[in-house]
Length: 81
Image (cartoon, rainbow, N blue to C red; front, side, top):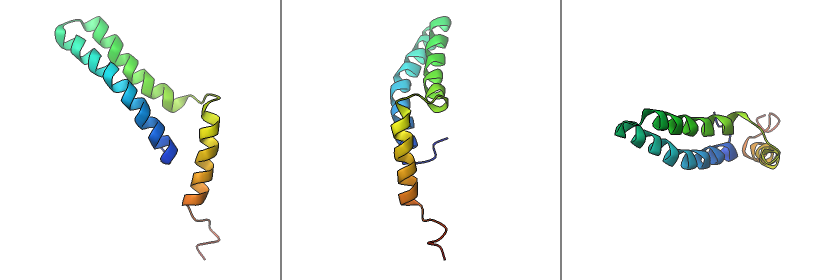
């Protein structure tokens, strides 16, 4: 599940790319081509799952930016007193 703004944006982008693939799979399923439809639906699901679970070197700047935005957006314990 997304934990912050950056994670939410990356999830939305991934879903935007996975949605047409999944819709193509559903179309194949409706047309009776169950093998190809299942492959495309599975591929769409895998796109979202892989994006959420695997950290790649290109994710490191986003992780660093996420930490910075979390510190800015959330008050520290000292500010609550």
